[in-house]
Length: 203
Image 1: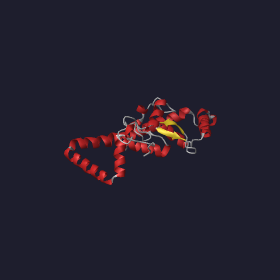
Image 2 (image 1 turned 135 degrees about the vertical axis):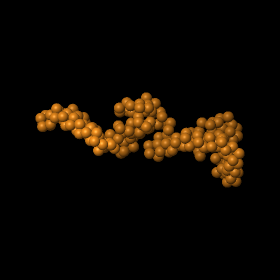
Image 3 (image 1 turned 90 degrees about the vertical axis):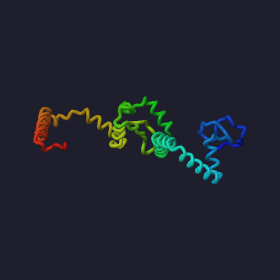
Image 4 (image 1 turned 180 degrees about the vertical axis):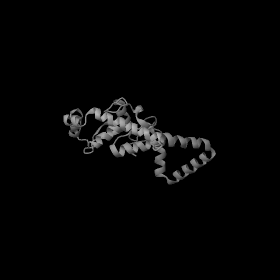
């Protein structure tokens, strides 16, 4: 807990002196939550008393206690876990991630797919340089996975692009397009035949 110097009761009404906290100052320049933490750290007996009081309150207010625990498990805990993950892997906070997401219009930086269109509503992945750690943007699973398979090497992407646009005359002569289409059609007929015979029910 980082506090500025010269904190006293006269700071009431100002912001909490803990770095990054936007809460209103209450006692000793701290907001209610940070003052509570301060007392627990300084006074073990206070911590025990608070635990007893909380346990007693939960016993008398079972439904409300369950509601609070359910809200924490569904809403607060996932955000805390994600915040810890982002900070430990990329040095980002949830606020940093959300700011990047807004800057990208909630879309993948490569294919432009909106986050709501992503299967299973997964988060956009943080794309970063594995050598320098520099954050490059947010990508959908497919684009992020594709970069990984190409080992983040621009030369490989250039070669792959050239391959996609290259017309291989030798292959076209050996395996003409009409032959490929016939093979696909025959394979489809065989597959349907198996299903009709009941030999591929699990496919």
